[in-house]
Image 1 (cartoon, rainbow, N blue to C red):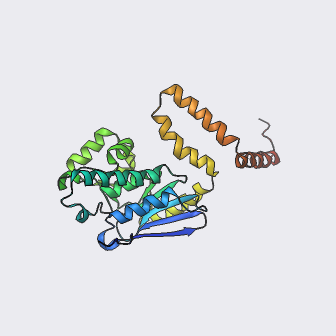
Image 2 (tube, helix red, strand yellow):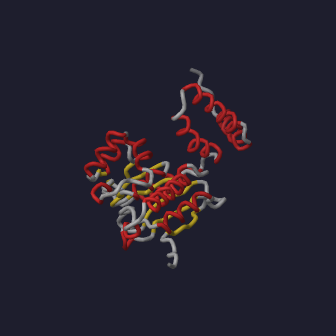
Image 3 (cartoon, rainbow, N blue to C red):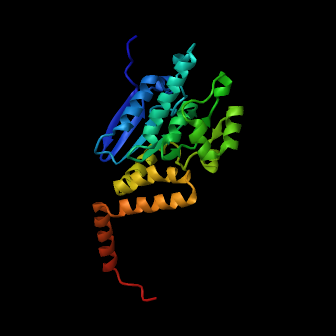
Amino acid sequence: MPVRAAAIEVRTEGVVGIVSLARSAKRNAIDGAMIRRIGALFEDPPAEWRAAVLQAQGEHFSAGLDLAEHRARSPEAVMAVSRLWHRATQAVRAGRIPVVAALQGHVIGAGLELAAAAHLRIADPGARFSLPEARRGIFVGGGASVRVGRLIGASRLTEMMLTGREVEAEEALRIGLVHRLSAPGASLADARALAEDVAGNAPLSNQMIIGALEEIADMPQAAGLFTEALAASYVQTDGEAQARMDAFLTRKDRKPRDAG
């Protein structure tokens, strides 16, 4: 069987990578080629990228998994697909650069699992989120039980999965599923602006923020505090940190001191 080219478009804008789901005729349903391409890209992103935007063409971020690929599979095959998704989304989540997701329209099932792997999520006010797998007779397999559960808690995740209902953007913001809402139609532009802002941080600081915080959250308090100290010692003695602190202190010294 021939391997279909992945419907993923990639470009670079300055130091920001733009990664687009490009299958709008299928509401950006994600097939195997697409998730493999995403995993490979974020496992080893271009050297000039200091942040990335994960977005989608068309009206919808993603209608979820391309179910046409998943009929009559063996348990072993289903397990293999699930583990492929875990590797790919972990490459997004635990890579060297922050990822901002721009979300519009439907963000369903596997689409939400992919979005949850991003570090920051900006949603259009018309975005709608759901996990309807139980309605299809299946179960989540791309990381929702872990990542979406971390975002909104096991109780809310259970309710979303049992009912399959749509969570509208305002509620998604309130419960922590997304970080910000854009103006109507502005989620892509807002995500790019945010990625450019984040890319202005020291790269090593960004790497430690996205790499250490979740690990620390799973540690006992004493281990977490010790890990924080190790991270600080590593980042704050980097050459770029020294240069940035020197520049900051020099600027501050030029300003009149507050006599109060």
